[in-house]
Amino acid sequence: MVEIERAVYPSLKGRTVFITGGGSGIGASIVEHFCEQQCRVVFVDIAVEPSRGLVESIASTGAPAPRFVECDLRDIARLQGIVTRTGEELGPIRVLVNNAGNDDRHHFAKVTPEYWDDRIAVNLRHQFFTAQAVHPQMKAAGGGSIINFGSISWMNAEGGYAAYTASKAAVHGLTRSLARDFGPDRIRANTVVPGWVMTERQIKLWLDDDGERQIRELQCLKEKVYPPDIARMVLWLAADDSRLCTAQNFVVDAGWT
Image 1 (cartoon, rainbow, N blue to C red):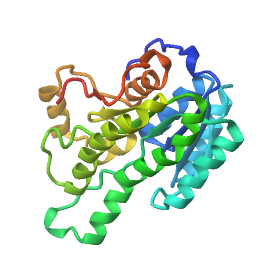
Image 2: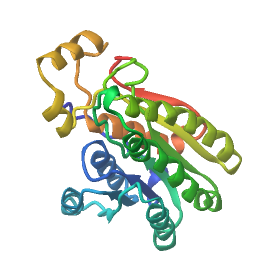
Image 3: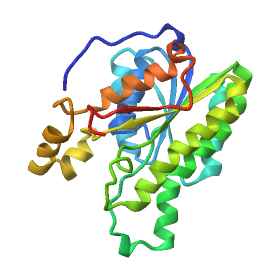
Image 4: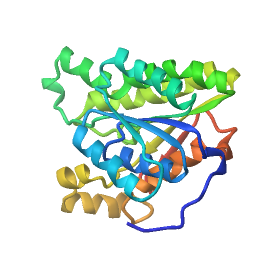
């Protein structure tokens, strides 16, 4: 992973940031980056031990420690309640990062209605309801930035996980609709679209010789994409530097798509 000098965004200092799925992988890097910007960070995740470890790790660096709240994002009432309490305790949420998702593989012939609904709940539904819950806070604060997470998988017509690709394609429509509905309140909505990001999970499950070959052949830039590469795009979209960017897709995939 290439280390670079990181930008500092003065507009982010002190802002309340809410992140879903922040305990590991891309989400953990996003949490770390916002803490480095001196933000008030709250993240939710279903994985307790990695999340607590992340809080301790960030605190040891001297950066403001994030707040972790355990939450299964399929429980919309609990999720929205955490959003409300965050605003009451830390000040209105100005940045929402809908990062959480799970690219569980499945054969189309084995998908049941129950499994389909669960995948939609894990990968799409919570993004809308988190945005719905945060809207009053952002409106009262004079604006905000919502960053939803998509995927290049559906753009590349990938198979083997139709419920996931359908969910991620829908995120793009959701983002554009939110941008239109929330725009009058100076709330921006954009989609970050990661390529194949080298998280611990991805490396363990799928990075084999064939995967290495695909990176060499399909990416314009022959470097692996890592979580900080995604986090840095998220920071820019959260900051006032991108104040007139909304309803857009920002692809970070080294030119794969």
